[in-house]
Amino acid sequence: MDTELLTDWFRAEGRDLPWRHPECDGWGVLVSEIMLQQTPVKRVLPAWEAWLREWPKPSDCAAASQGQVLRAWGKLGYPRRALRLHESAAAIAREHGDVVPEDVDTLLALPGIGTYTARAVAAFAYRKRVPVVDTNVRRVVARSVHGLADSGAPSANRDLADVDALLPPEDEAAAVVSAAIMELGALRCTARAPGCGDCPIEHGCAWVRAGKPDNSTYTKPVQAYAGTDRHVRGLLLDVLRGTDTPVPKTRLDLAWPKGGQRDRCLDTLLTDGLVEQLADGRFALPGEHHAGEH
Image (tube, rainbow, N blue to C red; front, side, top):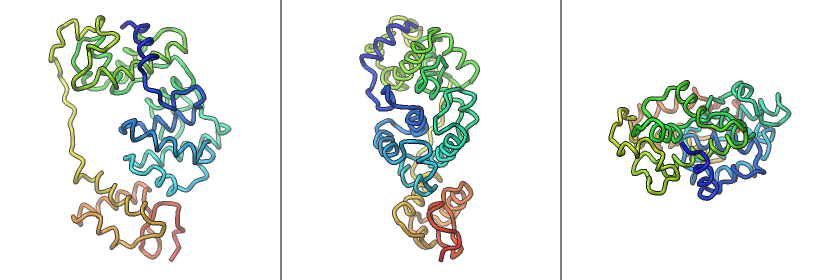
């Protein structure tokens, strides 16, 4: 892979995203990375900007209630991410002087921070030479290096080694290449209908040179959203986000007609700490109302 060509393309064609600006600190990058997990950029942008206006530092977020955080998360999906970010903010404020750590191992020790997020923060906020692997990166490497139509099943060690081999030795240059590979996968080397004619590394791509064979060996299962438990959980949370007062069970029952699925989803929301039940039996977002309130 010609990383110089790729870097030139990224500097000219990469999206102007606020978390890529030099003035964006580790907290801004951390918030963006957690929001971007399984959520498109266009939906994340307004939520990220509102979040940073409300809570410009980890300690600001940590001082908010879980309910406030869930309201700010809105409809980004997978709301447990919001609670994990809230926990991480508290740990950063308490243990790291309100500054997001720059070391991968220290980042991994934060609650709810996994391998990808820790590496992304180190590379993109602190410009470290750290391989960062997501779905887009794996697809670019599979095609350009290995000549495969898709990346197959994930393998953490192999995937990290593949990307590490592509990075230049200098920290800043490596950080740019990490971002550029990811951007190429998002904008050009897409899963369906890749834009090979507009790809800066087309001429060196092993898959293109091989005639773009349909040698895919892996099919990712795709599940419809409507009617799934995740859909029903979201509908129940929408009811609670739409009111400032606790609601009786009868209000939640209106959100979805299938009682067995609805009650099962409510139970999982309670178990996950995304909803709490008050002493009088009503339901609310966590931390917004005292458990003994009537």
